[in-house]
Amino acid sequence: MTSSAPPSRPPRAELHVHLEGTLEPELAFELAARNGVRLPYDGPDALRAAYDFADLGSFLELYTANMAVLRTAADFADLTRAYLRRAARAGVRHAEITVDPQAHLARGVPLEDVVDGVAEVLARSEPDHGISTLLVAAFHRDEPAAGALEVLDRLLAMDAPIVGIGLDNAETGYPPGLFTDLYARAEAAGLRRTAHAGEEGPASNVRDALDLLHAERIDHGIAVVQDPDLLARVAAEQVPFTVCPVSNVRLRAVPSLAEHPLPAMMAAGMLVSVHSDDPPYFDAYVDDVDDAVTAAFGHTRDQRAALAAASFRGSFLPPDRAAAHLADVEAWRTGG
Ligand code: HPA
Ligand SMILES: [Zn+2]
Image: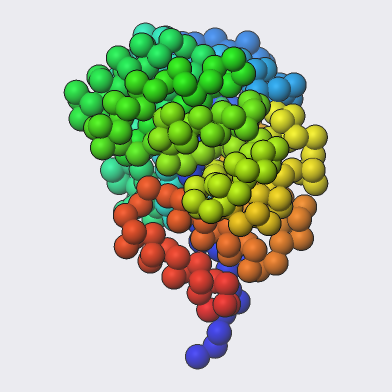
């Protein structure tokens, strides 16, 4: 038998991607035309040229404005399908996709249309794209917690196919403690729990997400390196952190990839994996992120395999499913 060259990237899971953040400018214009929505740009290239962000806030402004084109269940289905197609090319085997229901309810899009459009495509993600998927509903931390609780109750009442909840949007001024009731409700309902924390906010937000919200996973969490005790704790407890280095540079949470705390997080023994966040906005799907990280830090094959393995270990997959993926990562690591 002739041996073929091993694939250049390990199999991996994508655990930190916002569905709304996967909207490519071309699809935005297609949906705008379909729905009679006007985008204030001459075309996809002009829109893409606007993807130069000063901070998280300026990104959220444009990202939220672009959602105007998402009106119907079919739009959400098309968006989900387009992401899965691109993720398959990136070597993603399992994706945990975040959707922001409040962003659409605020625009008058029925919750059922959002959930049905996404769920219809996710239900067929394995046969159609070779990717298993789970859906996470994230809530806006810069909006009142009572509204989030109401939406969670509606999702539970309609038996929406969500594996868990998250917390996103502007972090500064909106600490995790505002959402203890929301997370307690989710925990009581048997939902998994992740939360953005320590992206633009302090390390204390990471600790509070763990202790007050019982978050099982932290999205971003890069501020953890500023608190040695917390760093040691999350390493000892092997709390999964879904880090998005390219996003952090593009939103100026860190000045450059070379100065990103990922190596410090790995050196501390944390369970850390790398992800895309909002791929077209940052011009990087997860394969591009992998390549950028490998180049920036000169990662060895073992280090790349460790990051890929962490993406499965940190997933909400059942242990036997994660174990099968981990075996594939190990096969990649050893060149098999
Ligand atoms: O990086 C992010 N942080 C907070 N909210 C978000 N919504 C999309 N991306 C992000
Ligand atoms: Zn995010």
